[in-house]
Length: 604
Ligand code: PYR
Image (tube, rainbow, N blue to C red; front, side, top):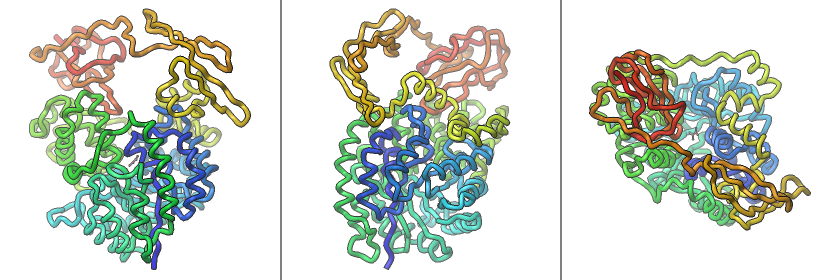
């Protein structure tokens, strides 16, 4: 008889995969004591990772360390678990080992018990510094993942076979893992494959095996049953109202699946169900961040997009004006994956494939034309970096001659920078602030500016934080025990010519006029010039985004040279000169928001 352990992912992966990771600390803390009290039999609570860290600083004006510390206090009795991106820690590119070490130590000191470590190309060398850092803490658990993709039951599968996973597991065990994890980030592990993979891992190795999946196609409860029968030690689930589709399978159906059997989770079905109404209500507040995947989709077996990315990619597609073309983007994702060598797709390799797919659909380039002559086209910076080996070597080797053609004349990204002596000192004396700055410099700066201007806004209710007050509304905030602030909104003025409005607020009854720029009011921005597609001297924006010129008027450029960069929704791409020539005119001033087809540069 063997009970199966359960990790609750509601605080991390569930909202990452359904609500663009937007759930705020306040809404986690409100339910955390109930999680702590009601289900002490949980193996762990997954509550932290790359996206939660990034989004806290970038969009929520929260310090991710403060969140972790508060959760540790609210949940003293359950293991807190985080997802660590190997050498990328919580970022998108590799960092020096000193950063990994300081990060792991600080996370352990603040409350993490279990680190689930993965690498986007299943390269154990990329995970080794993180594994060693976790082992060096002396207390934390190094759970090391093999990322699953494709279908090992398919006799035509040549790369990601059972043999491949067993060799990988052997390296992971050799590197010092305490626990083996199977990370099925897209929900591709079918029940028969789970039976084979889990029983083989249990037979070959002495380590506990922990299975993670996403229920994108709707069949993963069957996979869990097969894995449990094959001896899996623990599985991941989320509160039912935050489960399903791109998130994990529901905790309640997991409990019901095993109740009254030798594998019973030990969780109480009623206790688990009692948390559902809370999350049902909270989820409504976050409705604008819903990814709009209305139900399960079997197309995932073809495109293999991870759960966390599938929801995000939809939002990106809409922001790029490509919302109507989502099925084309899904097919292009599969085509881009094939061109790049059939990758393990998880942050950040999934971003490389997604960037290329969005870029090609946005530019209206067919996969055949692109693959035949990639040197002729703009290529997103992440794709160039990947092809230069920035993320390591892919398991199936490099796609040739595609790679050589794509890289011809394109410069390699900068190698990992050494830490400055100030940063090294900062990692000792002022660890959290230094880590925030090193890992997410831009968002950390904005976060600091927000804190300095407004104080700690994590005390606000989510409804007010996201959507604000309406005139006449009043709201009380508990700043700290015994200190209450009454905030009211009296009126908002018309915008002036510069787009500034005066907001008449009251703080504890005192009228406080505040000047705020209304970004929806167009300050005299001239209508953009459109490029003439037939004119070979015109360089156009390939899609909507923020463009920064890389050349000045009068510069001479080579064909294929980067003349500008464009950023949109975490995607960035180089815009290259279609021909050699001199820059006659820049139609851009500074970094500028543009629409697809806007004129950027005129060559002569
Ligand atoms: C992350 O790194 O955020 C994933 O969910 C894989």
